[in-house]
Amino acid sequence: MHDIRFIRENPEAFDAGLKKRNLAALSAELLEIDKRRRAAISGSEGLQARRKALSQRVGIAKRKGEPAEALMGEVAALEESLKKGEAEAARLDEELTHRLEVLPNLPFDDVPEGTDEHGNVEVRRHGNQRNFSFAPKDHVTLGEATGEMDFAQAVKISGARFVFLKAHLARLERALAQFMLDLHTSEEGGYTEVNPPLLVRDNAAYGVGQLPKFAEDMFHTDNGYWLVPTAEVPLTNLVNDTVLDEKELPLRFTAFTPCFRSEAGAAGKDTRGMIRLHQFPKVELVSITTPEQSAAEHERMTGRAEEVLKRLGLAFRTIVLCGGDMGPASRKTYDIEVWLPGQNAYREISSCSNCGDYQARRMGARYRPREGKGTRFVHTLNGSGLAVGRTLVAVLENYQNEDGSVTVPEVLRPYMGGLVTIPAPAGRK
RNA sequence: GGACAGGUGGCCGAGCGGUUUAAGGCACACGCUUGGAAAGCGUGCGUGGUGUAACAGCCACCGCGGGUUCGAAUCCCGCCCUGUCCGCCA
Image (tube, rainbow, N blue to C red; front, side, top):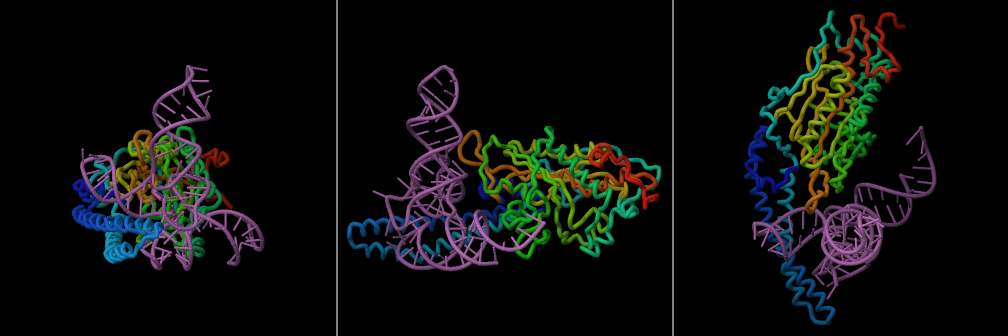
């Protein structure tokens, strides 16, 4: 949600931001609505003030036992133009809100130009793509060979884009999640673990910007709940409708949850394997900060997500998304892409966004600055730390051995009961 | 699912048709006091909009929406939400 006052004072910056989003300039049009809206408000407020004063005089007259009919008549005469004025003001105010709430956030100046993913810019790389002495298999081949990754049965029960993980792979997923949570909640991580609701109401989905534009991407229950597409929704809404003290900031929350996405419009995309499912596990990171801190917090958060991959020994690159490829709520987004030998490609495993005050405005999340009066909107940030299902894919593909066994990365072994190798399919019963 | 109760500022809480300009308390800020602190005392302090160079001023807001009235936090209707008890249930 944009601040009309910002647009009023910085129309050219606003239009420049829209341009980076590949949208046409709108400030002139919006300011015209705003102008009419303010005129309507001024007009109706004048009439309201008049009615209030007259009504008070009626009260005084009645108490004194004086006739009040003349005054009452005056109020009645205002009635029609008052109603019209109020309705016009309300209509224009609503129109402006509807126009503003569907617009995406303005990209920061350091966000690159571009219309799609080709405009994204790599900012760093870490680790080496493993050299295989054999042809590496993808995670589906590896997982199905042992029967521990079962798409065929999932289809019968839930349809496409679902999977059963069993035995070592089920445990590996749990191990990954626990490893990530332990890292994020450690002293250097600084996040507080949260176990949030996974069904939310409209207002929560609206607050983070999922509604009204992205209703078709979420699952909806027949009694009005949305299944969360990411824990960002409940975690960020932890500050919905609150006024925080500056000294409480920053707040850092992490949660391990399933995420539910209908993947509308993704027909035919990533149909093989665990890359794109209707239900997937993810460890989410959310930070609530002051406007001054948010850029530094964004770097920090991205660094914490990268730290997971470093400790797992997985090669990755970090890219900054261009204006045309960012999510609507974001002012700047880093994607972290992990190397997948089975796909011979880097694939997104985390996305870290600084949403500025865009979500805070929508959900009413403010703080009292230490200095100065009044309240200000907080900045909200969210990132994956990491997508657990895709991390499992990365571990399988990167740590596979020629016989189909998979070496367990060292940091995960304590979570796997000391297991060093997930055995090859041959020789199993 | 059934019955009842209730939604007021950052929080608690009074008000139930007209000097409410929403009492009072807590929290917060500043000052006095103190060796220092606590306590105490004093002052300030809601949100949004409009308006202004900035103040001032003005309007709205007591869950949301409609209605009654000259006038609604207060009365009426609908909706949403919360709580309590009962039932069912992991």
